[in-house]
Image (cartoon, rainbow, N blue to C red; front, side, top):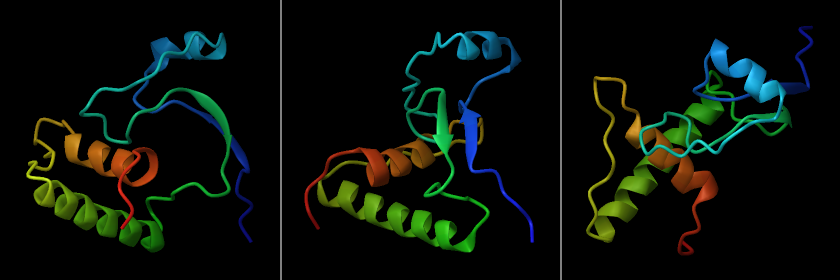
Length: 107
């Protein structure tokens, strides 16, 4: 059996130069509309309950969330965010923020 870690330290969208600042807890909120994994910041976190994007279950969850996000945007008369070939992941960011972080009307 493979033993998986139960805790990690992470910061999405960071680079090597930021590590010292992260370790010193000089962390700022990341909230660009085009970031792939939604709004975030550095953190120490437990891995139980995390979305494993290689797991088919979570792939289906994200696909369903994308469908629902698009339907809600269209129902509200808004154009859904779009990913761009340049690496701008605005749609991915919007779906993750919409599904897990944004307050929204009950379905």
